[in-house]
Structures are given as C-alpha cells and as structure tokens.
Length: 422
Length: 128
View 1 (cartoon, chains in turn cyan, purple):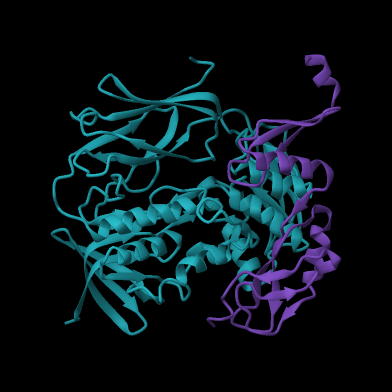
View 2: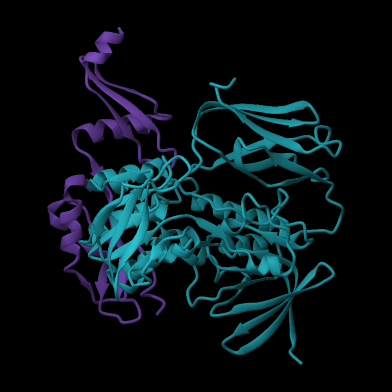
C-alpha cells in the first residue's frame, strides 16, 4: 500500500501558468505541490528565446527563459514542493478531493489534494489534423519542434523550407531560421488574413523580406526518405484548393504553424466539462471548473497570445484554489453569439465577494469601430467601443458587475456589432 | 487640405514596441513628421526611428562546450541597426561559450562594432 501524501493545492504543469499558480497558492498559505514531467521548469518558455515576454507585467522586453526565471527563482524561498521528471498517470475523485497517481524517479506516489490546478498547456496541430497528403517522409515538423531542434538541441532542421500557417510561432521561426542561415521560401496561409500578431508579421517577415502568401495552402508532399518538394495551391472562400493554381516548390522541410489546442486529457478523464469554442474547461471567474475543487488556467484553459495573461490566469487559479470553499457559487451562465470566437470565463459566481470580474474574448473576424454589449434578460449591463478587433489579438476586459445585476438565471450575453452593421 | 496630405508620401508602419501592434500612418510634411493611428507617444518615436534609422534587438543562440546544453540563448543588451542583424547573427555563429554562464553575463562585448553587448538569457548552464 502506497503512503498517501496530502496537499492543499496541487498544480500539474510547471510552465508559466503552473509556476504562477503554485506561487500564488503558496503565498495564500496553502501547502502546495507542483508537478512537472520534464527535468527543467518553465514549460515552452525554455525554447522561446525570442523577446517580447513581460511587456505588460514587467514593462520589459524579456526572452522566454528570462521571463520563466522570474518565477523559478522565487521557488526556493517559497514553501512550494516541486517534483520534476514526474508524470500524473491517473486522477480519481473522492468527494471534492482529488487523488493523483504520480510516476516519479523514486517510484509511484499517491497524492491527496483538496484543490487541483490543471496547468497542462496546449499542443500544436499536426499535419494529420489538417489533411496534408502525400509521402510520409522526414522533414515535416511543427513550428514548436523546429524551435526545439534549433534553440535547445542546436541543430538546424532545414536548409530551405516552406512554412504553412501564419501563427505566431511560425512567424517567429521564419525569422529564427533565417538568422541561422536557412532559406525560408515563404509563409503560406490558407485564410485570407494572417493568424499571428500584426507586430510579428512586421518584425519577423517584413524585416527579412520573407513573403507572406494568403489564401494558399500545401496540397501535396514529394520525397522519399526526406521531403524534396511541396505542392502549393490557391484556395477559394471555402478553403478548397483551386484546380490549375498548383505550383511545386523544392524544399527540405515543411514547417507547420496551424494552430494550438488546449491539452485536456487529464481534465476529460475526470469528467471536467469542456467548452467546444475554447477546447478548454468551462470555468467561473476564479478559474474553478464545474467540478468543485478542480481549476484550469493558462493555455489549457484557452490559447493566449501573451504570456503575461497566462501568468495572471495562473495566479487567479492559485489564489482561489488556496482559499476555496464548497459554498454554493450561484453560477450565472456567460454566453456569446457568433460575433465572438469565445468568451472566458463561461460562468460568473453571483455569490462572489468581489464585484470586479475579468473577461477574455476574441472577435470572430476583423472589425473596426465595433461595440461590445453585455445584456442579461433584455437589460444592457455594459457597452464598450473598440477601434480595432482582430481574432488573433485577445482582448482583456475588467468589468464590475453588482449582485443586483446578476439576479435571475438568464445568461449574460456578449455581442459585438460592427459600425457597418449598426 | 486633402490634396496637400496626398502629395506627401504616406507610409504605414506597424509599431513593434508593445503587443498592441498599432498601425501608424506616417507622412513627411514641411511641418515635420505627421503620425496617426498610434495609441501612445512611443509609437511616434518608433515611427520616426523606423523612417530614418530602423533599430532592432536581436535574440539568437550560441554554441557551448557543454553536451548537456549544446546551445544557450543570448540577446543584445540594446538595439542595433536593422541592417546589421544578419551580420551579427553570423558573427555569433563563430562563438563558443566555455564557461557556465548565467542570465545577464556578457558573452561578447561591442559586437561587430555596434557598441552593444551580447548577454546570456538563460540559466540552463547553471543547472546541468
């Protein structure tokens, strides 16, 4: 029989969300355990050597490892117990406690925790998930894998490559590979507009005269042991390739930056309800899921574009997890129509002490002079104008909502109206 | 008024100072540089520099003598001319770090005569 170790708060994943969550829980007085499967803390930040991290939080332009170190260096002075090279293989529920089976270097351990924080990050979409067909040869990488080869292993994975998808990591890798001496033939995006931040298109592509081709995609791969060429075609409004527009581009690598999906395998194993829009857990404003005592934060909750907000999300979860109660939350549903891609949190506690609530949303499409309205049962509770909204750029919205405004079970409805449609 | 503005060359610049990524429309007029679209003053400064002497910080990695971390990440401790990015990156391709450096340690002084130092941005060599 394994001896059970008992913690108030257990955090799974020591990336930016998990680090912030563990430190916040410890700061609030909770006996906290932080579990990380890799040997080093910091998650994906370890390989994100470009700068721009911490602009919101520290007003500094830090690289990923520097940003992570700001949190890692606080751990020795804290009471947080950290297990690296440790893997959570199973979670069971006992009332609102969670029981974890953890594989560690010392053997299998069992942990009982009052609150569980899932800070498991996200995964990259692969070629299998976007339907790239043809030879299964070497040379097809996700942007994150190419980044790992280049920045951690010090091995350049290509001499001449095509990048498919214009997500931020793809743009960052276009610049990175160029600086290392590789030729980036171009970045190809099936959508009519780039998926990454405008500033990344500017400083990663334009600065190095790397072409960006929108409404084009990769339709076929050629090569035996190693990729030799890809076929590119224009796509129509439905993203279907247009016959006769094909061109063959010789290259030794195809690098994919085609989206990120929150990693929620553990969450789903214990039945945490997932939002179909975010692919992350449904949470209240404290990042507590619909399962009492289970919290979600960072990119596991919804894919962020700034690490500063990931840390903030972890802190919200950590603080709440340390002082949670099982009192009824009085959950009010939060919904959005198709003018928004999503809204987080998806629930608001009517009974919460604090009236200041923090929402995160993305618009469904590019909008100028848009007005956001929040209504409940026909009453407009809030309205705000935005000069520009772009789906790749997440909006952070602090709002004060009084208990009187939250009376009744009608959902809070978020809606965006374009100036053209007004 | 419209025609006067039109006769000057207008360039749209994306500000990279912060995540807002403001699209700034710049026109060189007899009264000086006219900017619109920026949310803060840093945008005007950025646009002015961008039109005359674009500057960038550089982040990259250098080889090490340690098998546990064959490369370590570095960056410039200030900005260098945009046109020198590739030259500096090439020069750093020749550098091999032989000590277990930490965040902030200088890897190369006054790189390529830019007056800017290259500093280490990771503690991975400190924790083998």
